[in-house]
Length: 550
Image (cartoon, rainbow, N blue to C red; front, side):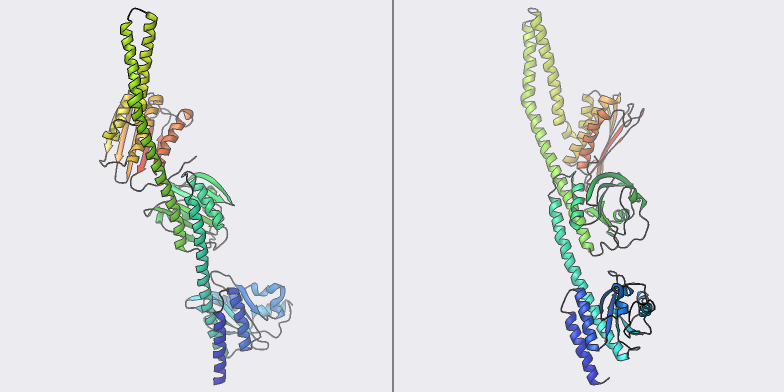
């Protein structure tokens, strides 16, 4: 190779390198560098195919194409594959080569699509950067059937420069896109943190996420009762509050994300839709992401996003997806703490009311009863009408005194300082119930857990007294390092789901809400002629947040 030719090549490479670094616009870069390459080499035409994960055999740049290849909006360039494309996809094309005869040009001429303008052969070279492979650079010249080794070497050097520029621009675009994603994430976090009602959080959160990121489908699953429960679903810009249970191993990628406590990304799925997800209204998807929701690194649910468009979520980094799930979890935790603070405030208010009732109202009612009794003694036998009235006053005051003491007990159980089981037994005995108690575990319960179990047990004992048709009840309290469970079983006749719906619905809702506010669960088992068992389980260390199932 002469020094003059070598100098021209170096000049060409320098000019092309300067152009490649002048912009971060991919389309502009490819178009400009192709035109510059043809200018400095003297070749008459060229085109570039992109065939990596982000493009599929797309002719992204072309310059001076002959009429045959340019016809019908370059239909031949986007049509069936050819030798060079097939070889690239099979990873058999690793250097610049001569194409003996271009099948695209042959096809265009055979189908009379236009004049080939003397183009019949071309050179092709893969666009690579390290192990990354992006596509093909093709050049041709009228009447030229073979490219020399020097020409192919120059094309190889230019292709490497283009591949490096493509990688640089991809990295820049990924960083830019990531910045946009995190800016939107900031908006989502702000809106979610503004939600004050924990029972509205699932519904409002999935709508906020779907609207902000323009995602087709967003679903929230919560693990409860050893199953995955769909709690809210966003689709087609509409949101629905759901409560549908799935087996924890039946929800496809949702189950995998929960079981393995990791992000599951699906880029291009040709599989049949998951039957269980389809059954509960999750449409078939080509791409998806299942984000585990974790408290202290323990999963309690999954945020599932999906799309019928392939590779929809490829531009989202794993750190971003985990951040979205973690910030949702923070909102849940904040609202749970807020609810617990409100519950503590209610407890303090109940205690204050109990003290006021005991110190003022009860004393006055007791004084009224005492005065009535004294008046009866003074007027004994003198005025029967007045005496009967005084007896009625004394009887009513004693009944009011008894009801007031029961109310105070409900507001602030006198025996709770001696333990939950003791307080429940005393409460049951005050209603003439025979209480058999059993305890496992010795640890002290947190105040809010003990208070919630007390209220649940109180309501369950009330139901036994009113509806069970028995005065015998068994109470089983279990305290472990992770959980506290209270089980109350009567020896009554039971009930069916619809038999006493009007009588028990409010009590059931109240018990369930107290358990779920602290991340627990409530189950009620019964049936005609069978005992009724109410069981509340509340986590002590790391509760799982659940919401109303209305």
